[in-house]
Amino acid sequence: MAKRKMMHRDILRDTLDTLLDAASFRDYCPNGLQVEGRQEIRRVVTGVTASLALIERAAEAGADAILVHHGLFWKGDDMRITGPKKRRIELLLKHRINLFAYHLPLDAHAKVGNNAQLAKLLGFTITGHFAEQDIGFLGKLKQPMLGNALQSSISKALGRKALMVGPLETMIKRVAWCTGGAQGYFEAAIAAGCDAFVSGEISEQTTHLARESGVPFIAAGHHATERYGVQALGAWIYSVYGLEHQFVDDDNPA
Image (tube, rainbow, N blue to C red):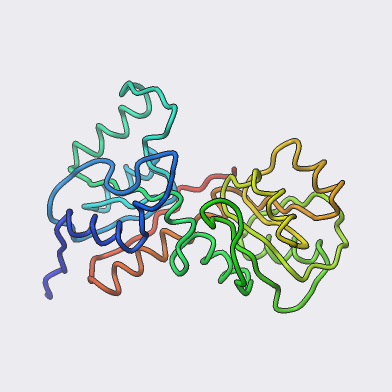
């Protein structure tokens, strides 16, 4: 049996930090290695969020490292290690599993990022960027379609009913998108000239802006729109360095 490929924890950290240009982003969390585990990494589990269920499944799979989009530490959080956070960290330390997390850097990356991967899945052609730190993506559809047809297409691709507010039968040619909780970029997307904006979540005021601007807003699910960046990054790690990779989908309807 061939020996599994191995990579030192610190080399993997530096490699990912460089690939994703993590140091250049102003973010709400620490990007990179959040919890230190064993030095030698052979098996990587990826997932959207560092939930207890994901960590449990990673431990069962014999993972040396977990790579997620949503880590454990956020600006404004209670700094005490109690409750759910304590149980997650305790399990990581017990099994000596490294936790890597990349938030905005993973959203923005041109190839393995959440927005780039969502465009690939939905068939959007990327033409530019908008919003702070170029987080939001601009593009066009392969063929113009009505808003409700775009809603159906997105729902089918993601396996989840997408919610659409605003005019349902607007003809869509140019689209803007930003995965996850990016409803706050809706006005910037409108200013950038999109015919529709796609994100994960929707807020109460978003409905009124969609109706009054005439630009439909499609909420396709925070988790559902952010499943693809970590998978692409895990696949890249495997293809370049030969580390075993397994994606674990701890499903979330939100």
